[in-house]
Image 1 (cartoon, rainbow, N blue to C red):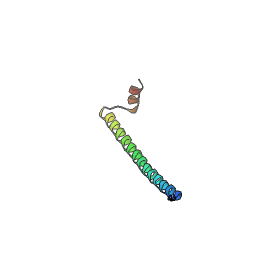
Image 2: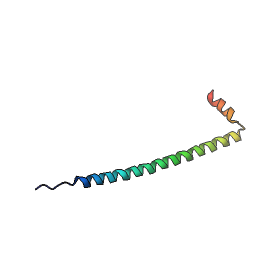
Image 3: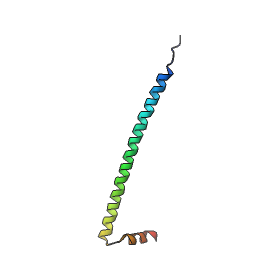
Image 4: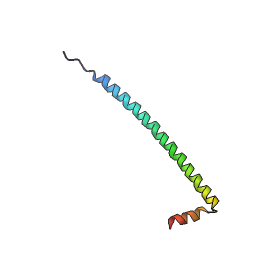
Length: 67
């Protein structure tokens, strides 16, 4: 005699796995956002330090970039 398959249990198990993975993805996306913000802050700080060290204004830097 064939064993009866409990589809509801299998569906519930898969839905639980999906929910867990979605939670992990959400956490990883938050980490990516945090790292991007830290990188932007670091890049901005490096740029401002360069500008101060070389006595440059934002307008001068933008003029060099646009040319």
